[in-house]
Image (cartoon, rainbow, N blue to C red; front, side, top):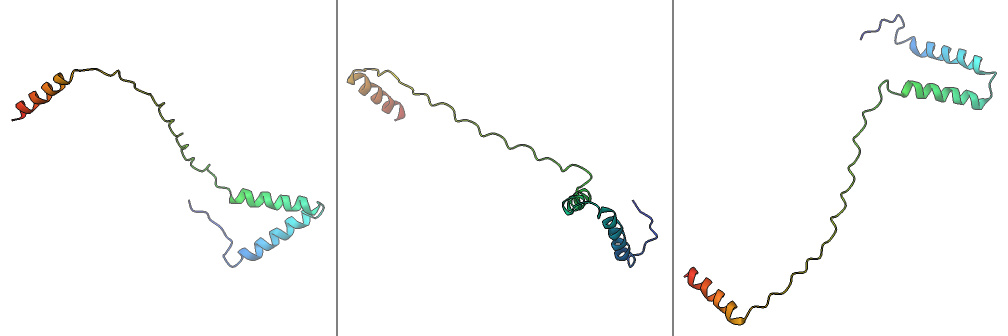
Length: 95
């Protein structure tokens, strides 16, 4: 968006100084703390962007670890002959 101005670049510092002096003359009736607060608000107003900054999404909360479950299996008692027989059958099939 183009802005038309009759103020030249060379005139800007002198006009800015004149404006500041005029404002300071009006603020002279206030204590120094209030004058400083005024200028701080001006700086904040002119340095604040027009649009709110883009908010970052919130960081996800870390997942809680799953509770540990203790698994207890009952022991199966097999006769030694059954274990040997199963192992022998597996060897025969593999051959």
